Length: 170
Length: 267
Image (cartoon, rainbow over all chains, first blue to last red; front, side, top):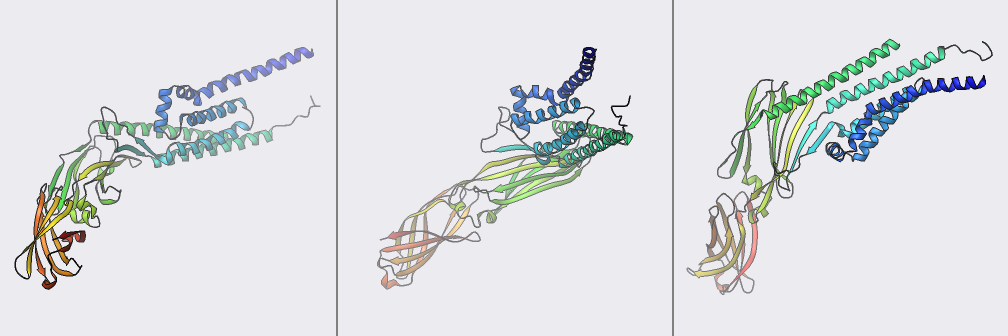
């Protein structure tokens, strides 16, 4: 009897955890895992470092953090932690967005090629100024952060409203 | 509360989506504009006057994109070999609306007075100037694009390249005046003719000043000069012994007030 109850508990636990783990893996892959695979290829990793400041290893760490947070959010579903992690993710993404885009001013040096022969002492560069666009993105991230905090407050309020059944009552 | 949060989430998602679509369409439009040669340059022209050179280049902006172009600007900066800015000029077209074509002429006027004042070394030494060129515009009021070319070299030929007085020869005219023949080494590497004035002070072998003189040189562009003459007045004829040294200075009106050359011995 006790063994049957133990087996049912293990089966119930597996029924809850396995879908959650699968969902965490799939969402983790969607939210940054595929970029880690692409960065592993030297051509793509090199291209990314050309356009964005920082080495390819720091870009990998950035995606690793995002994947880790996404996996943790889905594994800890039903607790307060997904909301806390979502707020953390919003803050991190805001900071990284500013750093990676150099504050909204990207300067791309144009190297000499056989089609475009540039003397060695000359420097040719292309600059994109998108500070206003970055500001809009940061504002949307801030609203998303506020949304996550409201969700956390809503979760806590619902938890507080749930009736507490003492163990001795049927 | 849950409905409000859900609505907020949808609003953020929708706004992000609209912004991304807008950015993609903007970049595509800019790409199309540049590929269709929406920005074109006419024939580069150079004209010169007495002491000025003007470089001009027509610009044509044909906005075939989907949005307006604002603050279209071309800037040229002219720097010496040390990186100090000699002159700078910008040409701005305030707005080119969608489907519109506008043109302007970008000019850069260089006055030799501006270039050579406080830069005596440029009179006697060939060097290189650096030009920085940038072209930029704002698109849809949100995005700015700029292409910069830095450190383009342009040669500068010195008007009095290698100026040296290698010797002097004194020819008496009378008791008070002498004709001084100066042996020179000087080349005019610039593209303008140049003239200068020599001021001479003659000393005898004891270091006593015995006379003064004035001479001039004129070197057409690209030419060499090997001799020049100056008229010397003996202010102290009794102490003139036929041997001594000459202090020579050179001046160019409005450019060079006074520049001492090494002393030359005579006799």
